[in-house]
Length: 511
Image 1 (cartoon, rainbow, N blue to C red):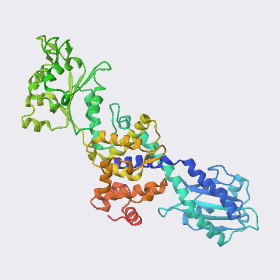
Image 2 (image 1 turned 45 degrees about the vertical axis):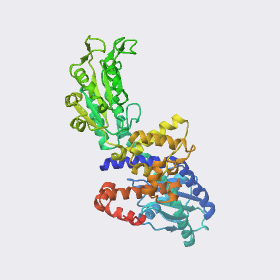
Image 3 (image 1 turned 135 degrees about the horizontal axis):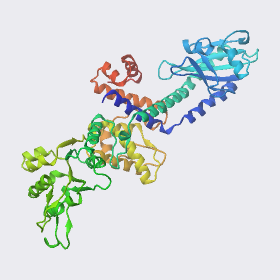
Image 4 (image 1 turned 120 degrees about the vertical axis):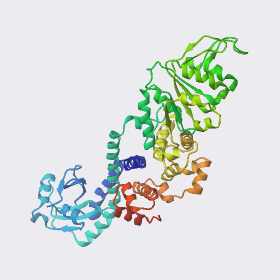
């Protein structure tokens, strides 16, 4: 998949991973440090500053007696800016006798800063500095020592975990907002009700073709494996055809007994054959002015194909037991899981009918060939099934998400829906669905082909752990796509080659 689609899929996964957590929960955790540190370090005030991306200042995200974002400290000319710039802790006693940004800050807060201690908050995942934690005293006798500095540096290591979680969560929210504005309604429409998820390039091409065919009244052949959504595509085309009053008449050719096929399509008069106790219109008549959808057209018996050809070609026919000509005015949309051209060569399908059935062919790829659609589709099904079963299952565990993407899905979308229904039915409310509750087929596949990163990652709700697991899976998959070429893989992941090498080394990936 191209980079744009890769990023879209990553964003959607991150939204799913963060669903169990909220910014408020992380805020509460950091506020705990704000309340604890003054007591623990015997100081009067504690403030946490975070660097705003693209800004030349640090913002006081939290602080004793401060409103959020109350103080903006410049990166140059302030104590916290100095710590942010060089990553080194600073102790300043007798601060009230010195000039600096702290004087302006004191005017804003009404606090007299005499002694200050600032230490960096270092990222737990890379070498970035996330922000600064500052302690303040107003009493001359309570200056800070090197021992105090070392104690605060140790505390900052644990504080960084909470801070980085907040930043990740807020970035995910921002990405999601931007993503929602960019993606069209058609691409985000539900799989059911005649629409389906289309994240993959192949399915977006199908949707583009559908948009054109809505306004072009040509006959269409839709080819694809069972369960790929052929009838859904047909209904999408129908939505733009002939207005609300135009009929959509589906017929499954594989379900019709050969003796009744002709009566089904063309109708019959009363007494035309044994059991015909009343006159009945055929499917061609019922579909007049609309669409006749012929599902599994490759199963149509050869014996009825000549009369069917005339109906398609001349748009007219007559009921069994009658010579009256009836005009049809029907648009045909056919679907099959067979290769009709091969069936023609084998003599199982008339060549002349083959060429009259359609002017445009739509090929729907199987689910295994459009992996980008699997998780968005599964999430869409989860929402539907939760409503259907009156449940509140939270989502998919990371290991289950990986399994869903790696499984081949021989039954395609229909099988995926069935699997989600099973998982929801067997999972308690407010929990993540797990591999252990999958069907026998998926469990067997998982046992033979899938290896979890760790049980800890599978069961943990920790956002950093979830993101780490996600990064490891994406790196493995992208390196496989790039045939081991780190430069190409880095481009696909939209990071530098050096950054990719560091992640591979950090995660100890055996590629």
